[in-house]
Image 1 (cartoon, rainbow, N blue to C red):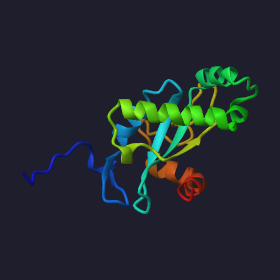
Image 2 (image 1 turned 30 degrees about the horizontal axis):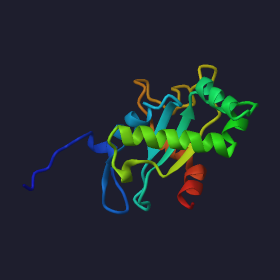
Image 3 (image 1 turned 45 degrees about the vertical axis):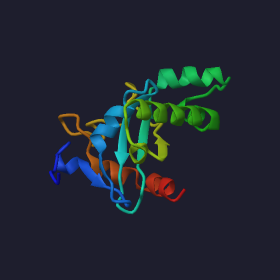
Length: 155
């Protein structure tokens, strides 16, 4: 009927290369339903046709998953194993589908952040990744993960 429906804040709606509009907060909310994800940030670029995400894993649950594959080590060692990474990505995709996300809303690339503080968080107000009201500072995150995003986008 030609009407326009606003589904999120204007600042949180981005356009993909293929012309689709994505509400990144809705995607992030869906991904946080995964028991393996503690924090996440979804990146959208007008030059890409798909989303990229930086995931901070739930350390305890990811380490239990690694134990099922008989993998020992710290969080960085565990996330470097292809089987653990594949299980994490599969879980994210399953949660995204269960949340009703469209195919273009499911992140195509995942970077796992392993530099976490004592509470298991990588995005904090102390490091400038969160505002005082605990919202993601997207420009700061984009600058912080620029190299990793470029690597994911070129795959």
